[in-house]
Amino acid sequence: MAWTVDSAFADFHTTINLPGDHRTIANTRRDWVLRRLGTSMTVLDAFSMGSIPRYTALKGYADLDIIAVLHYEQHIKGRLPSTVLGNVKRALGPGAGSVRRNGQAVTMRFQSWPDIDVVPAVRVTNDSGEVTHYEIPDMNREIWLETKPHKHTRDVNSKAESHGLKFRQVIKFIKDWNRRQSISLQSYHLEVIALKTPTDWKSYDWSVLQWFSHAKSQLYSCWHEGNDVSAYLTADRAYLVQQQINQAYTAALNAWYATSGPNPNQAAAIREWKSIFGQRFPSYGS
Image (cartoon, rainbow, N blue to C red):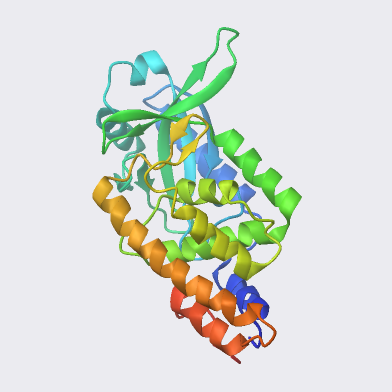
């Protein structure tokens, strides 16, 4: 039962967490993509990325990202992102759904979990032939985005190893909050903010409060690895997200103050946290 803030957050994590190691199914889906695209496209590599292999996924809301590295000359050079995504959709054949709302992937539906988002990509190498990063499409802006998926995974793993389980758990709390907002931040943006948040990640309430506090300054300009992670947000959308975060921050601050003094009020704090995280967050004493 949730008699304290800590126990409430622990129960909340049990409710929303996608448990287990899903590398086997990830590899199966990756191999499927290689076979299907390989019939009409030259695929140099394919690998799974995203929240599932980084262990930041939510139960019931997680798809698997498969990055398909295509031959540049044959499939990327001189083509708009929308053209490349359309070609990938046709190559995937029956079952290929629409392009994701972020304009970066084609969704493939399966009868069993998980569905996959296929992200076409091109390698970028240095003079020594080493891969420095990848570029992936953004159909919404018709530009190619620089991304370093392997490094991001290493950064998340390193932070989790040095700061403990709560780092990933808090990311999942924020993702569950984010999915219920009228305007959602991209998952990568959320995780970058977490990587940049100056806290020790030792307590649930303080870490969540600090994420919201830091996020307020990361909506109009969030530079990471030489790129503005927030660039996908228009000024109007960034303003609306700012209002959502400000509201959550105020409630989180009230919740933290309720238990920070000499006479902690766990019930009041849990009510405030529930106002942020919704019905799946435990009530006091439940």
